[in-house]
Length: 329
Image (tube, rainbow, N blue to C red; front, side):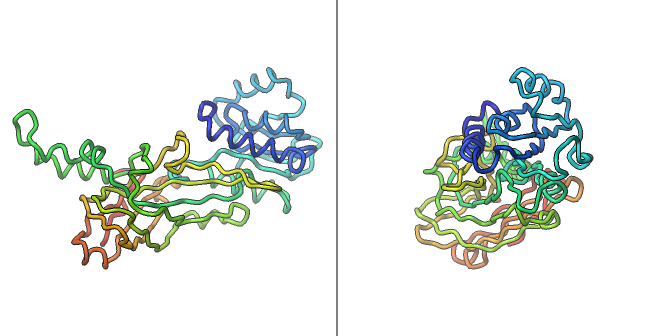
């Protein structure tokens, strides 16, 4: 997180902007504190007490960082999963005023800590307390990525060193479809108007709602060309009295660690400017690992009929080939 300028600066800006209103004299919990940068920021913003919850081997370094910055009397390190944490730890109330956490994963939910944050919210946050961030969205578009498509799949369709390797096309395609590709997508590679497909209000979201997200939407093509993939990204928003601070991983914003998530079609498909593509989106928690998701995106039958795109138009799983949810057109 530390060297990822957009995400670090967004968190610090949100905390600094809300210092007087939300942090001064308050009890704060940092879920998944890691290096402690958010705990330090909360302490600097005037928090009365900060609980830095960290279950990994980082806790020793975390304590050293806190000491080096002179916040030993304000920041308490809790070396356990938040699910095992017991309150009260000291003179504080049994609830906190603010929970901060950098919990997001690829396309927001892959390997995220959101379930732990919601657990902490339900057990430790005061009824009027705040979450930083408090809202998250997932957005969708389609893209033309000929070079990346050729690199991932299509290069074996052409003679290679004078040999025919076309028999490898099927296995390479299945490998590409097994899980999203994490890569930087340029704004000019998007061939449809971006659409926000999921909005999560973290103040009311229930853990069980994370098991299955589903929506139907349309995206409008803005140019003629050839499509290769869906593109997913996320934004998160922090509370603010005057203006919300947003951390965005959209293609037109500075690149972050998360980049964008590319979900390949099963084959190239035509794009026609003005054409509305109906898309049905499923995100399902993987049965073997609840912090991974199986992704299924289904193009509407209208586009299949009009453009001749069959059921191979793409579905992937963040668990891998064995956990693929499958695609149906």
